[in-house]
Length: 62
Image (tube, rainbow, N blue to C red):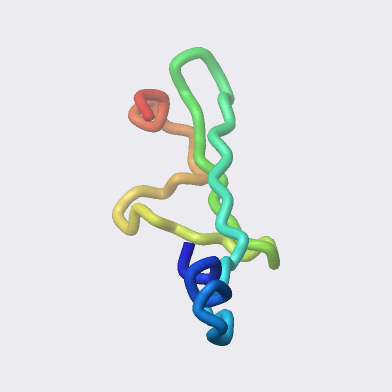
């Protein structure tokens, strides 16, 4: 939205998207992990106190 408004106002486009993606992966019944990464395949952890790349039952409830 920021870039659309900037374009309509004739301003330079400043907003950027880093390609963040979040992929829930079911590993077993009632367990899953969450793969989070950007365009460069760099891991992006959005929950600092939980290891989302380890299969967990609590991730199943997402």
